[in-house]
Image (cartoon, rainbow, N blue to C red; front, side):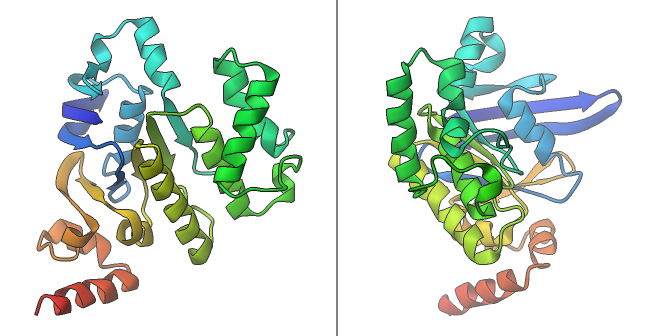
Length: 255
């Protein structure tokens, strides 16, 4: 579990995060949404330790990050997997080399152990027969699978995904969403996803954190978001025609 207590972050005279308190449970897919300028990118980077917060605290399974020493902070970073927006694969490496990279960098596993683990996660994300292909030789959806495999190859406790569906067609995006959710539950990972994709909100939003102007404006599940009367939330999500149709369906079911 990741717990966030009253965190604030400023750059110069501009306060970006204005006191956010929330939590993210293991085994659940939690989504962070909000308009541009809402603070969600700074929020995610603060969770990752990229930004040092001004006040408040962030804890990883009861370990308060700012109170840890250098080695303890490094230990937490090794427990984090990251899926980047553009996949961020190494073009010169094969699929299996990309996936095995964290193991070579951060573990003392032997080449045979690395190969065994890489093959396991390749099978888990259904990338059979892609081991020796380069990123340019596979589709965007397969590249995302490689990015997910790389993120989980080191058995992370925490998984962060930045716009994992960016650039994907709707059908492939749903497949990637489902894969992330399956892996989250299967390995009991604390997963936090930064997204603007309302399809993701509706498909896998077990917890949704909606930020506005650096504040936590609303939080709840994908079922609760369909029924909220919070004006800021409805103004944001109503731009999605799919959301309008699904919300109507949920409300009609309650009649």
